[in-house]
Image (tube, rainbow, N blue to C red; front, top):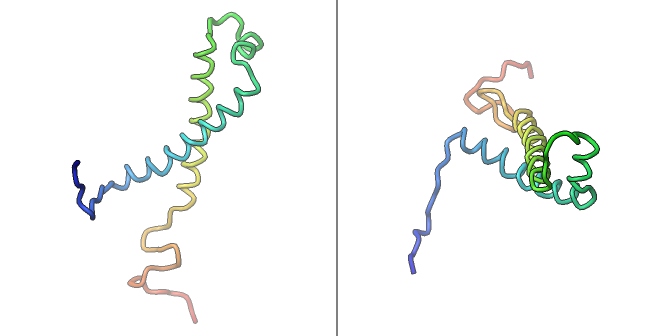
Length: 105
């Protein structure tokens, strides 16, 4: 058996961390949305009602549906990440300690 060090860290850069924060929850949400949607809707019937001239199999319908849900939930997570960003020199609690506060007391 291989023993791992107790303080093993996996440093991520800011872009990798942002990608993980956006893509992982959106992936899980897309899985749940796909399962809920396709438990009620047959992709073959949906294909016949929307694009009957295109040769879309059930498997391709499931795949397209999953990636559509993943794109929508990724955009939602990305929008949340953008809204949660703080301006430079700020913390979530207010101005950084080394930034002077120019407001009158």
